[in-house]
Image 1 (cartoon, rainbow, N blue to C red):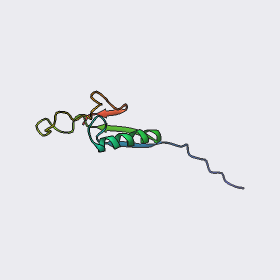
Image 2 (image 1 turned 60 degrees about the horizontal axis):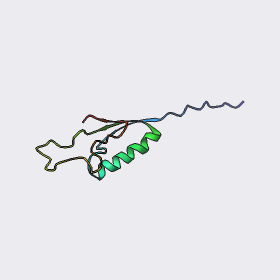
Image 3 (image 1 turned 135 degrees about the horizontal axis):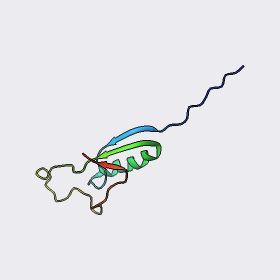
Image 4 (image 1 turned 90 degrees about the vertical axis):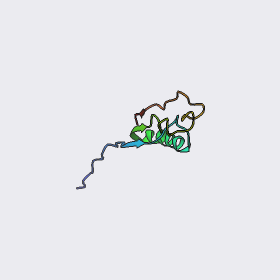
Length: 81
């Protein structure tokens, strides 16, 4: 007799991604957003991002948001930090 092994149902990994996402300026935010979009296809993903990166007194510029993304919010991202 041969024993047959029951296959486990395929389950998605659970991942939490924390970091700056668009509309924040900079390469890290752009690459984090692309990483989030890719991981979302393969995992049960929770994404947490920054509402603002710096307080007004510390940030010398006028806007933290990337040009062309003034009111953009990435779907599925919680902007709570």
